[in-house]
Picture 1 (cartoon, helix red, strand yellow):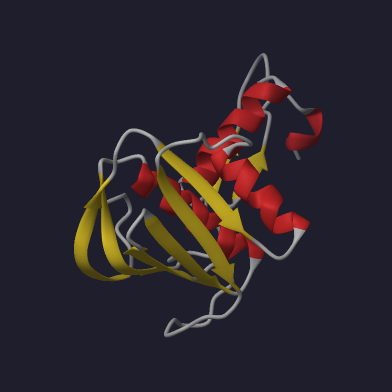
Picture 2: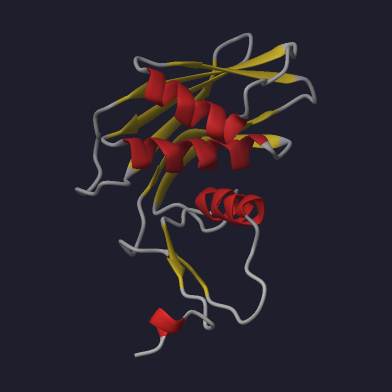
Length: 165
């Protein structure tokens, strides 16, 4: 599974993934495609075991919440199917990162996984003395934190004169 564990899951089995998976995503907007490429990268390989993902903007059986999602994973005879149910792009991003973490393992749970954050704001504080991070380092950290479900950054350099009151 992945950490943190989901709020709700109904697992009915598991699929053992081969090393050569290819991931495809059917979407209705260019922004959804951009989210997919941000999470999975531009190239997902030409593997023999296809993983197809589709997103639907509706929310079955979950409390109200901007980042709540449900993943329904099933085998379809030739590969793996994943349906993502959510209401917002933020929820789609969280769901795709969770799915990516599941696909990184050898066994993928089959069934329904529902999750939503316990806190509205989750993130880190970049507070430091001395040399700040480069733009590239900051983007790498933001990607890493997004993959863990974080959604905010507080930039607070200690040497900044505006930081002191």
